[in-house]
Length: 65
Image (cartoon, rainbow, N blue to C red):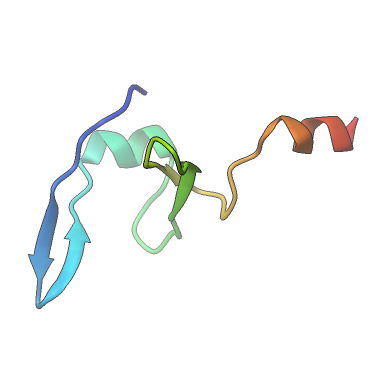
């Protein structure tokens, strides 16, 4: 899935993201599942929506091998 721009909406005074159904299907999640917003690149101010609390990086792969 390519990057997608989402608009932060007002939900009773709190910020909320409305996720399109195709995003939920691509992630393989359903109502009640947990999703995490993880900072992928601080310099580029890039966030990633993930089913894991931490995005794996190359160091993780090297440590497992």
